[in-house]
Length: 376
Image: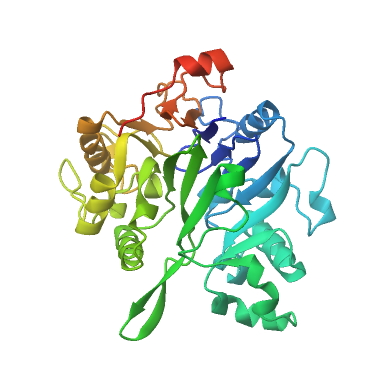
């Protein structure tokens, strides 16, 4: 059976739902950015859309919810949506439960938080302290201080901690048809020692398996070209370059040029060497690039002059690299059209990755008509 990925139109924000072949659900981030009081806001009603997809899968909870970091555009509204074990106030009927929570170490250690970020930190600390339902993405030593304050050691909670360069042990590719390889947070060895890079952001490669055929998704977060370059170098150093291959790329930082290069360029951003290699050499044919962002601005427009992403120059680079490989570049707030964006749904099967034409996952007959021929 195929798996599905859904990318929701929520502006410059991230929410990605993975529906596995067995209908279990894995959610990366939750950012309900829509202004319910603005009738012209085209961003989707995220709580309703996610619950509709849960109903379609016949699930009332998530096997995993990953919060890649605690910025508002990745967690907005989480406190009002999920069931949280640490607080009875946040356990009302209709709130979906989280089987396992994935967070970076910063979600445990960060201070001076409020709102959704405070709630997620409280839940993560509760689960880590009790030793259940959590994976913290970090080098173990980073958490030692907090564990000691709770009368615990790293070894007491080693099964709750996943380091970069490891597979998340919660999934087995043979049994679940999926596995998750952790790229970030990671550490880079310098002359001064081991240095943490971009410690507040989770980046993973997802491998899907059906009928002996694998497909790959690279789920980027808000990292820049420097951190991305170091991530690539680290992966090369450990002979894990296959862990960077991709059929699906969820763009880093909402199609910002800063994930490619320090220089935006006049009409096209030219990426630095390592990033260029990742995007041009490790992409599979008929790749799908998803930009979780506002529409790409027109040259000379007010939006084009805005310092915030998406950046037209970065988009032009991505559009160029897919020309010879029959790939697709899709923007969440432009698909199928700017006036009425809908969730982008991908079907991942042994035949390859297909963009679903309808907003909902189709029947078996309809799905068969929309598959693609897998490239070699």
